[in-house]
Image 1: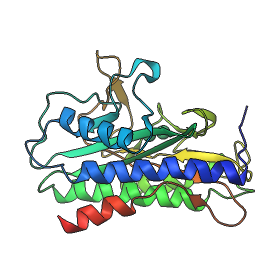
Image 2: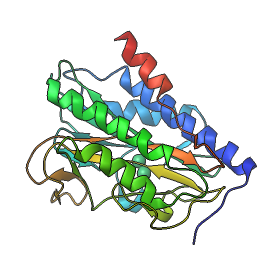
Image 3: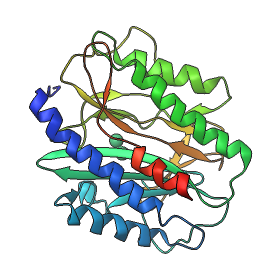
Image 4: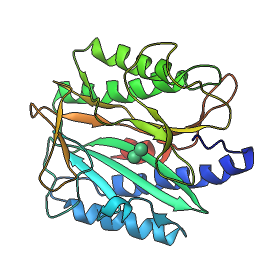
Length: 258
Ligand code: MG
Ligand code: MG
C-alpha cells in the first residue's frame, strides 16, 4: 500500500531529508585521495548522531555501516572499509537518516582529485537526469513518466540505465510503495498524487546496463567494469510542481570551495 503524508508529516520528513544533505556536505569536506572509505563513514555517523538522528541504513537488512560507498564501477550498496580513494576515482555516497520517525534518503556522486572528462560528463548527465525525472513528479503524472524522462535523457549518450534497482516511496519506512524505476513508458504505472513522497534515484552506467552482485552480498557493480553514477533526492508530490525535500545545496557549497 502507498502511505500518503499530511503536510505536517512532510515538514517533519523534510528535516530528515535536509539532515542527509548536511551530512553528505560534511563528508564531502573529507573526500580526497588517500582517505579510507571507513573514515568517511565514521564522519557521517558522528554527524548524524550529533544532530539527534540515527543512521537510516545501519542494520537495515543487516547492512553494517552508515553510508553506502560505491567507487568507480560499483553502482550502489558498497560497504565502507579499508579502501583508500585515489586520484581520478568517482565515489557514490548514499546516506539515510531517521529523525522524528521519518527517513531521509539521498545520494551524490563525487569526484576524487582529477577525473577523466568523459567520467565527469557521466556525473553531470546523471544529475541532470534526476532533475528531468523530478520535473515529472507532480500530481496527475504517472511513475512511468518519471522513468521515461530519465531513460530518454541518458540513453542519447549511450549510457545504460540500471534495471535491477529502482527508486521508491519513503516515509516512516525506508522503502515504501510505489517502486520508481529509472526507465519506463509515458502514461503508465501508478498515478502520482499529493502526499506521496518518492526517493528518485537514477543509477546510470557509462556502458552496459547489466550489473552483478559481489560475494559480500551487498556491493552491486557494472558487468563491464565501466563507471556508474548515482544521484538521489526525496520529492513530495504536489499540484503543479515537485517539492524537493532533500538538498545538494550544502554539498555544492563545499565542492565550490575546493
Ligand atoms: Mg539512497
Ligand atoms: Mg533510496
